[in-house]
Image 1 (cartoon, rainbow, N blue to C red):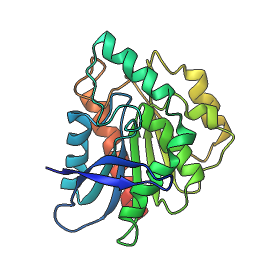
Image 2 (image 1 turned 90 degrees about the vertical axis):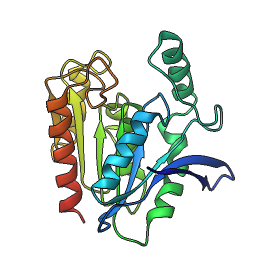
Image 3 (image 1 turned 90 degrees about the horizontal axis):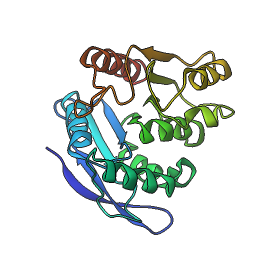
Length: 221
């Protein structure tokens, strides 16, 4: 189990983050980026699972400026709130928060990043704009194709669901065409297939994507 800590951002903001220490031999640091629903129990469990694999994990609470420690359910009302908060926090504006998380992890080994939904979009932008990341694995980031004209500074893999109602396959192909050297994996699943809280959860696809993510991290340690 991890704990909530403070992250001091370069713009003077102080935001919360979930911090889980590595178990066993430390393999590196890992930033886990939330879905639009905040740093929920699911995201904390994801962080804990990577900590069990040997990574020191930080999951920043990226909506803290508007809604401190925001956590949402999948109710229609909460989905609307979550979408509105995501709209107030576009990927460009959250790079400093992710840099603050990186600063807490650097100097002790490689720093990796993974993220889901909203976090998957931030993963792509961070890989293109932030220096010092060892590797990045982004899951079903709807906005990632909108940044296809930017080039990652580190090894990246991206994961998408073939039946994702929010991300048409032509957008995924646009990202792949712009970066043929970036592995873009498409799974027989819908949006949110990694989360066991969601209707589109697919255990086999989630396990395969996690395996590929851990292999990417190991290859760039």
